[in-house]
Image 1 (cartoon, rainbow, N blue to C red):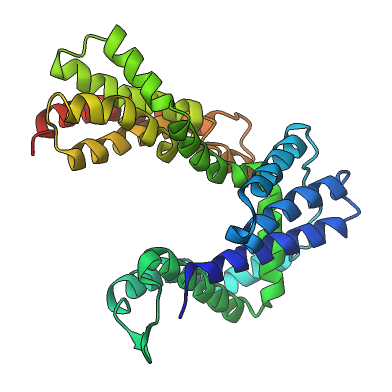
Image 2: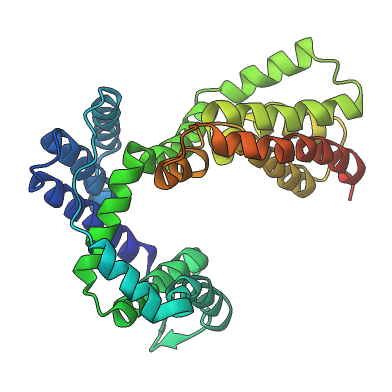
Length: 317
């Protein structure tokens, strides 16, 4: 009854609304090209699998050219005046946390309690994407609660969304594109090239060195690509499966789990992970663009070393 496609359409409509608001924003010096960028991204969600792959690829390339040319700029969003926001915050107090807490609460409820609920002969929630659908329902519930608490309209929610999208700019689409890039690399045979380099030039006859090469490779490739999901098919196909599983007979589940943990260490160290390390800098208006990365390095590097030790000790479990 409620499938993931519903939320793809809603996301597409949100980006389409952002494009329309941008066209009407005369304070934006690049309003037409910025609106073009968000309009193209809206088409990807609204048309989805109905888009021929080649056309979707052209849209992505066009978006990259527009963003790369510096033609995506923030405008002047219509937000609630600061004095009104302060008064609303003082009136509501900790109740402002209710909408935010509703998202994980509804996600857990849908994933655990509603997974077998039927409406007639059909399941209420799409079982193939249960967690994502539940999170989408939680987001809608949070929007409804926020409107009820603040006495605002859903349109104001769209305006606030547009303000955040403007602040994050093209970095919003980076995780989407990088995740797809990992699959493209795997299809292009980059994993085989990594396997050739690893087996030819690295002394992988030592189990400890093989574990280190896998974990460090996951972290480094994530630093380059900005996304652990993009790095995983390449490094797992190049070192994890042929060396750790094929030669040392490691448990594939352990290899995959610790490999992803190592990739997340790379996420903490790269500006390419824009949604984690660049967006907070923009939203908080920090003077140092690398402030988040510098704060995370003392955690990332020891954690990477710990992952190597864990993989070496647990790979046969």
